[in-house]
Image: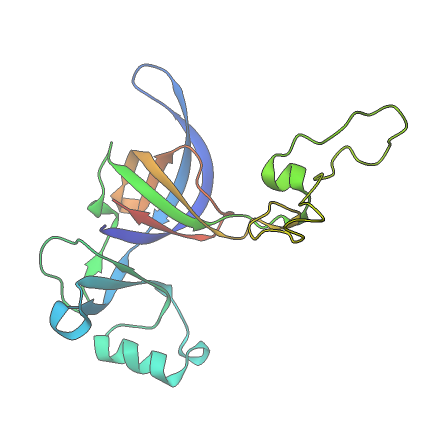
Length: 205
């Protein structure tokens, strides 16, 4: 799917034409520069590699610097590939938020906020076991049994248990574009998207 890279600015709300208050996420989208054009002949598939946000040369390796010099663009901090673009694009071309329009529907890919090591109630929504009476005092938020002793005498893979929560790639689909503001490279999307303020997201048509 064609798309662009952006940065989550924060949340606000706007009023619709019929007076409803719509919660919106504000995203700074692009401008993104074409740093590589992948073709079926050379790479086996067609795609555009886009770069977003400037980066100092001292923070890049020599192969990375050579990649940007070959494309004829300044070093970029973030790179991502998108497929399905219509039309011909060359190295150095710039894509802006004007790729999207009001009332479009998009998919947002981001990294969710990390919550650290959490128990099963917060991590998986367990309801807790037992009752808070009859002598038991410390099992309210425990996971309960994780497997039988005699057979299979092991814990199956994928068992929902306590552990690292959040800080993973999350995709939210079919979010409505409320408003596009090209002069500020800003797009407003209905609802919330994964990640904290300032995090990088992928916006796909």
